Image (cartoon, rainbow over all chains, first blue to last red; front, side):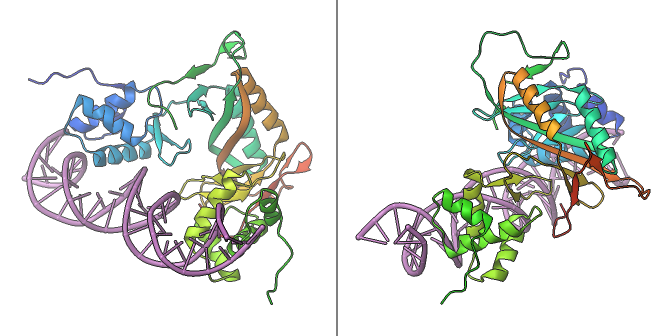
Length: 165
Length: 165
DNA sequence: GTATTTGCAAAGAATTTGCAGTTAT
DNA sequence: ATAACTGCAAATTCTTTGCAAATAC
């Protein structure tokens, strides 16, 4: 008898895309669903091993490539030579600010920004397909101020887990 | 007797940074100064070989790394697995629009944009250090229109040389 | 049943490095 | 003179692949 948690969000998407759900894929899908940071392949592999020890790195590589092709995952490059992954969030683009001192990644949204970029592409004679925006910054001295806000709503989320470039 | 052209712009910068100017570095500096695209290491090596055949790839790698550390060069990643390089342009940031159909890179400026990003970093509690922005787009049907403009000035420049992602 | 997927280990691609000899300052 | 630089080939690092065995549907 196999104990089986409910389908993870990403497993759902895999099924919708007609992918064959092997044990390994289920585990990787779950790891990805539960990640709220930007793990690289090695980190995904490590997390997957905790749930199921008969997984190889090769499968992790194959799976992230597959899921990227299906548009379920997005590959990021924050420098450091390895690809990082995160689940595609439809509609709601978000961007990354990388702390140059410790590699930590802060996510932020800026809905207005995407429109600006669409207009810009348009002016250059192009139809907007996608974009990549990374900000690099250095933390200012904390002055005990209110949380960062853009257009009145809380906007940033800081990551902690194995998330250093 | 050695025939020696005038110092290239990048050679100047190297000297200002106190780097030892070997023949190889001079050649690489010149290739970089004359490039107005985003060559990868292999392409730099190829161009350097034309000017001086006793250069090795290892030296090109070592040199671009050094110049990047000194802030003279900037490394770019337009996908395709290899790093691309271009001279740092102080003050005047520029961005890249990649044509998804053929990998061609169009450069554009948007001075307003950089200010927006600085403000954004500030709101998140960070001092702006640098940023990376890549737009991916698909060329619209040419409708015989005037060249793309932003804020009234011509703004885009298209590359041709070995510049396909 | 059969086409897909997996693990393993070997192959690849891009980049780095150890070392002995060369060169800029 | 001497510390830094170079070429070469070997080493590293990240990622892909060929093949025989395993598995989903």
